[in-house]
Length: 485
Image 1: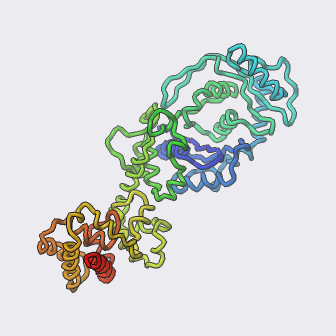
Image 2: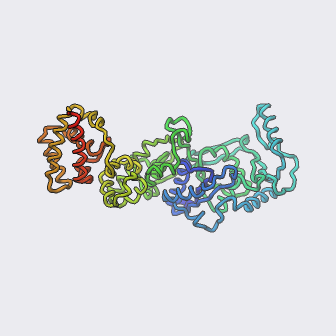
Image 3: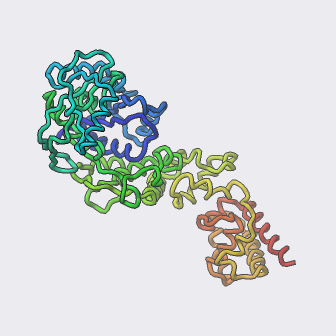
């Protein structure tokens, strides 16, 4: 198998969204599977859209996901620097090579004239191509003057590892800009040079770049260099499936999901499988399994619908997987910052006990704030919530009071407050009261938590402890008794 040398080359123009991340995952997996090389390169030549701090966010997100790079920022390498703004002299040198070959030219045409050409073509209802307005003579290049490629339009054919055999006619090839007025290269030019100098032999990017590929092929040809494997990644689609996923479709940045308590393992797993599968029914993959099973030919050539419900389901699976395989101590450190404010006064061991009985109900770690607050502070007292519960509302307040009196008496009599004793006591209460579990347990559960749901009742009461449990049950009993007076 060919050793893959590839790269992730994001632009620091804002938050990193899930489409960006998937464009990093696939080349990473291909490189790791072949014991190859994964490069991080920052394509920061679009200074008008540059966002301060975006590079740090990119680096932090890749680290969080476990997508370590072999070469690039913070790591170094033989092909430094890895920021394109620091490589401008390299691009100018390569552009001048094309000028010497007669395949590029300095173009002093101002933007107003270029717009005039565009308007003329639009008026004639013909496609605008700058090469049709190419100057007859070219001046010597001077600093501040753009450099354009001199196209050689002809039919182009190429193979894409995802989209198959493709071809395009000469009408889509043009005199693209290589070096802008500010001396920085365009993406269309810089990535060709960088990929060659960094020995990249596989390029993965979004399918939106397919229309530009004929121009890239022309540049490879002009330089006399071999093209790399080309991998076009279809769009991630909105949940409706009829358009490319965007901010308005509810998808959040990777950072926002992270702050909501989505685990990196789940995010990596979900995005890797969003448009790829290994031909089996498997859904939960570790990074190691993804590396082992990944293949370019299993990437689907159509868009994949984004499904946040599936992501959150997968996150819940990963929460359980971590605890079931490694224990609660493996998950607990990850919960920092996700507990309710009232939990800050409690010891780690108590919070671990809470986590141990609630983890299998979590979809995200941020669910801890709502699901566990009653373990750390008295819940908001709402007798109507109790009286309107579908299992409790069939009883009168006097019947509920009687059930609570009997329950409190039984629990008070326990010599040992632990799960086995509580389970036995609750079962004995079912027998002595003649009530169904949903009826009696709902009464006790709501009385101690006033929460929509809770873990198994014996587990909940055990963690809450004798004093808190009995105090909350007595508070409800008293309120019901007063209502009857």
